[in-house]
Image 1: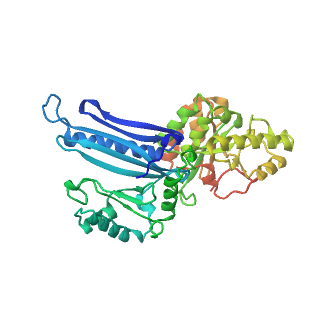
Image 2: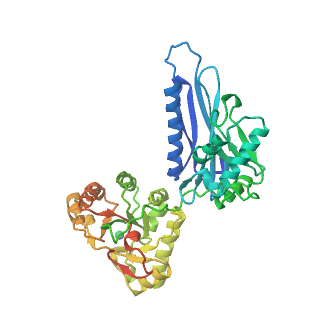
Length: 429
Ligand code: NI
């Protein structure tokens, strides 16, 4: 398999699963803001350690052959569209040594794990299987053709490309051949010319032969959430204005993540600029981020040029730190005008107001915030402010109360569906 220098991959770190007393040490890569692939890799490392310990652990003080497991990784493909990580382990349960290899393919833009079969066209598998069998027989490795087909259908060979552009397939020992054959692998030349590669496969091949690790996007595009149909479900949108606040944002995000509740944050551009990692986290965790102006003026009292400066600068900063440009504006105080509507339209934003005002900023009383939020009806947009600790304190009970009343939480854009830039919305369906 080709090896790509991983040092250019932005946000790269590693996770180690180890058990020193048992000589077990497995390292896998991690990618900041890419939780789908990072969590999967951690799981694989933990599983490798757990199953090795279960199978081969030697009680301490026992005078058996020492057993050990070591796992390492490399990058085999890297571009803004695809990443391929090779995980390999070597283990010695005593006298002998075995190896395993696996390739994890990941689409960093979609934030989605890929299956190696995604690299191939639907029609490719049978002829790839034939070519694998033929190549192994040429190498005098006795394999069962049926077994090869089974592994390709349902198993987990390590599939990647060589530095010469051949399709590489590696099999763990004892999967398609007897143990004495070791871990058989083949390289099949010209996979593109043979019509085997899907569009994703072509992208992966290009990212192997001409890797662009520095182009891997640091923050993935917002992954598509499980679709909620608000014509069927009773939807409600929680909104939080005036942040992100360094004192409260992280705690609120933790709460929302634990409850799997999407929210909408109308941020000030000045705050997003000061606390970019918090704004980035809001988007990375599938919340919506809207524009709440740069420094919270009464936009309805300002000139067109001043309004444009407030809104454009904020959208530029939000896009810069989160990778996503806001499609919603919430004018401070809900104060809008024809001029504000015109600039919002020009900048591609609908105006999102609210129909449930918790007045959390005024009373600073969690119980009153909870009571006000419970007045929400189907399609309501609930206004809160995440700069007040008393509001964060109210959030768990707000969520529980609305959930018990049968509501499903969505972002404002999901609640409103198709919107018209410049138009004003107070609730959805
Ligand atoms: Ni505000």
